[in-house]
Length: 332
Ligand SMILES: *Cc1c(COP(=O)(O)O)cnc(C)c1O
Image 1 (cartoon, rainbow, N blue to C red):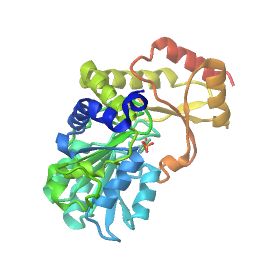
Image 2 (cartoon, rainbow, N blue to C red; image 1 turned 135 degrees about the vertical axis):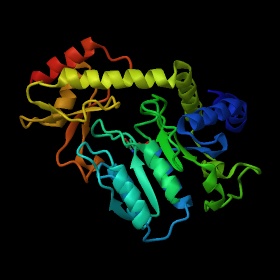
Image 3 (cartoon, rainbow, N blue to C red; image 1 turned 60 degrees about the vertical axis):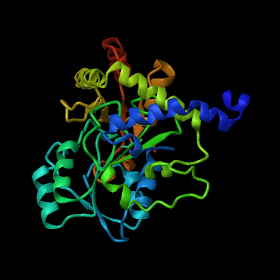
Image 4 (cartoon, helix red, strand yellow; image 1 turned 90 degrees about the horizontal axis):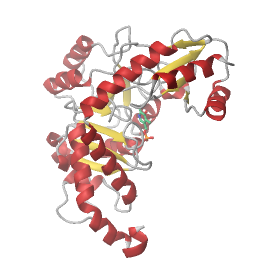
């Protein structure tokens, strides 16, 4: 409204204290300095910007877990990078001892971890991986699209990125990229002719023409999250996740994926009676007002072999909600 009333640039100037506080709040959550945080358009946009700015050669290798988010692998291929797979334990978490050996014997150009998977309750040990990577001088990049506002994301990664619209419940069309200070001097960022002078280098990754109102909304969501207490939100989401999996286990026609005691609230179900997930999702919304997601195999092509039904319960999920979902799922 302000943009229409007083002009977009003036409105942006007026909002600049809110935007600076938003960058600082997000930087704190992601464990980077405030000057190392840039607003971008999405998590996908953040990875693209990261890959464009990072000192990389065509043919360099990125190490990922088998659970890696599919579109990230497309972004690595688009940048001319090779992908190598990290060894994992039975539950899908990376094997840290294998990582340590890989870093010592054939270090990749970077390790990339998706901290919280989108297709099952899997959380990667990013803080431990960051320590190993730092000791070996190999950068760790973290996709925190499903992790921000959900688990602890201040893990010491060299680059970390996320989105507004998932667990922070901010507006769409905004995301963020954080880069640790060690790398600022090595980034390949062309200073745009129109750029304001004296900006921190990472801020040059921000689009000049942008959804500023969305950035204000994200800044507000980040502030509200810090006011609520990130640790309390994390604890509550881990309870909700375990509660959801316990409640849905044994529902006729559905298999609940693990690991069960994960701190992730994300819960996914495999149909065991050949149900059409698109129809199930539509029926849950239309008849029960319950929103779920059909998670196609493209989300994690190295790990998934069939689509899943995903439940993403938030802090306000009640036992009654879960009872309604369970009953709605068992009526086909
Ligand atoms: C949603 C998601 C993304 C992409 O986020 P956008 O903001 O939609 O680009 C990336 N990684 C993971 C793990 C996701 O769940």
